[in-house]
Length: 348
Image 1 (cartoon, rainbow, N blue to C red):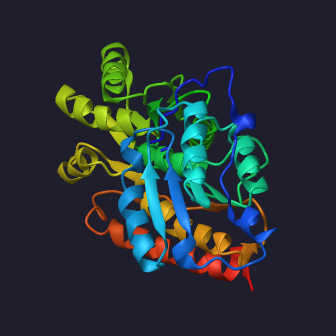
Image 2 (spheres, rainbow, N blue to C red):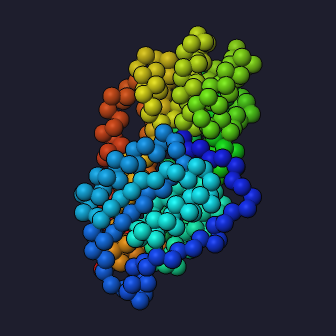
Image 3 (cartoon, helix red, strand yellow):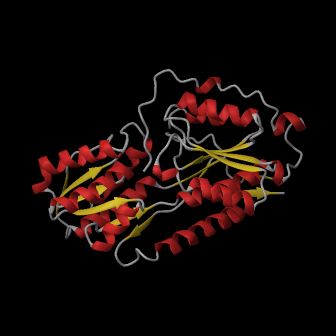
């Protein structure tokens, strides 16, 4: 969202000392074998901090609460991009009876410790919007954009808009975030396929902290390289919004492909100043994530493959489908729910 902004994580993290003291379903049942009714299931949707990407999580969680008759679904974004604070938020909610969590971990390298501690106490967990770094996922499942694939799609669209040749700039998020590294790989893959026809400038990372940071980065880029640029691909939310305005105001003939569906981006696609954007599926992450978590928290279902990583979908939006892409995204969300029932969950 993340798109997703992560600040540099403090060196000393208290992840491994997450203290869960509340009576969880496992504590209450002596092993978690007894079924838990839907109205006793309380789901926490926890972002790493405030960011526009996560705003659809709140209404999607509310809809899931009603549709699946759950006890509660709460969206919390108060972690302030600090892993210790995020752990404190989760710990407090567990103490108040929450027995399932969908979490966008602040520290991709340390969030597995949080998931492992929750699992010891019978709490259902999902990595939402970002999978842990490395090869393992200690959450029950991860439901996230395949960020490398989404970035590849965006870069391919930018290269196509450029006529297949020229100089391309890449704007993205926190360099230490594993998602950022996947996006960088996706863009480089698309550029490599041009066999030298496209030159990629050094990746411009760490420019998604906020809109002001992004605006300065884009302004500096256009001032120093604008006359050389044929295209820009942004794989982070704030620089995408900043670039959409700056490129239009500059009058430069730069083809821009953005990320997500901020109103500024969609309006620019309609007026032709932005070539395309790649939208993600935060609504599907929260809605289907809550659905699957409720199944796991019920103690009637387990993951067929613990730690399963599921792509929540990404979609190229341009002038041809800007008015209709939401239908495609809704269809993907419905299919994801069906896939959990048919492939990813094993239920009694």
